[in-house]
Image (cartoon, rainbow, N blue to C red):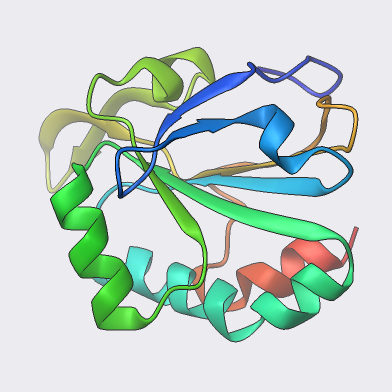
Length: 150
């Protein structure tokens, strides 16, 4: 996915198994943020930063949806533990991470594995991708400020 592309209509299923569609957010800017794993330090910092600034994001017309390949049960625990006010998509079949091009080979301490590249897509009211904050640009402890500073 690149700037100017139309985002897919069906985004996936949330922590409650409900289908989430792009049209659910018509008239709002959607912050679709992809992150590697529930409960890990970087992902927790990112989610809590978005939570702490959620009112300001909503006031500016944004809605936030997180996506990881964790399952619904994991998402429910993550939401409960950190009081997250936004939806998390359980992309267990990796359909969305692959469609957005954020799934691939990573390496840590010389070990190679496949995972999600931390990436945020800002989707406009018309469903078109307006901005992409890539893996090397996302600052987990000030991510909301990055989104608001367009």
